[in-house]
Every structure is written in structure tokens, then in C-alpha cells.
Length: 196
Image (cartoon, rainbow, N blue to C red; front, side, top):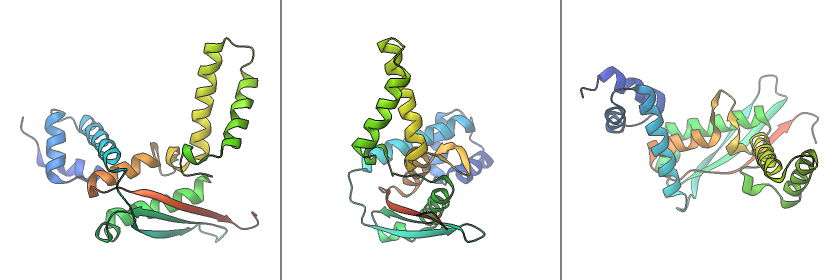
């Protein structure tokens, strides 16, 4: 199949993928840009998973102050090398995460960071709400509500404030696919005037 240069460019602009990766994805998708996007997203997630055990001791700290100077956020995001930490793809990602933290108020980085007592309280609330259902229906309802809870309080599970069809973990995986390094959100803090 003949892959058009403008399709390769379009895919690269959308994902930041290299020329060869974009061409390969388009070939696999038989020229369909949407399918190629899905292929690159899947490969980015697989690559992120394969690199998740590697040490991420470099990185950067970024801040975002919302216009009006009443809300701000600071995040630390780590990667494996200083070379990647100085790259524009990584810097843009960290700035986007800082903006997101300011706008969406996450409380934890991932579901694994939610304290057991908070999780137990949520589960108990959902169990009481599903008390009149059969065990199977109640379990399904509780699982669905827990997923919604994670999306509301866990940074990695939240839909990105500027592109709600992508989660923060998807943004990170896209950049992992480009830079080929492990990337982790180390910590964040959000400030709002009068909020203590």
C-alpha cells in the first residue's frame, strides 16, 4: 500500500511519533489515520508497561498559575535521563499536567495511592446504595462506582482537562512512545487562595 506523505505528517503532528513509526502504523492500518492513531496509542501503552520498572530519577518540576493568581499547581514528573528531561515533548507534558492539576483538583496520583480507610468508606457507601440488588448486580454497581471515584480523585485516571477523550495516563503513554523512556508523576500540590 502506498502511504501518503501528508498522512504521515498528520499522524506525526497528532502524536509526536517518529516518521518510521507513523509510516508503520499507517501501513498496518491500511492508510486509515484513525486506526493508525489507535495502533500508536496501544503501542505507547505497551511500551510504557514494559519500561515501568526502570528507574526514573531525572525529570523536572513545573508550575501553573491560573489567570487571576488565585489558583496554582506544582508537579514533579520524572524520566530516566536528563536528555529526555530537557526535550520539548517531556517539558510540554509536565506543563500540561500542572495545568490539569490546577483545574481538576486530583487528590492522589493513582488508585494505589488512595488510603485504605478512604477506599473502605467509599465501598461501604456503595454497598449501602446497592443493598436492595442481587449480589452480582451489587458487585457490578460497586465496581462501576469505584471506577468513577478513581476518575474523580486520581490524577492518572482523570480525563485531561484540555482533551477529555484522553486520560492523563494516555498523555503520559503517548510521550513514552515518543521518547522511549519510563515517565512517572512523582508528586503534585495544588494551591487555592483561602483553601487550607
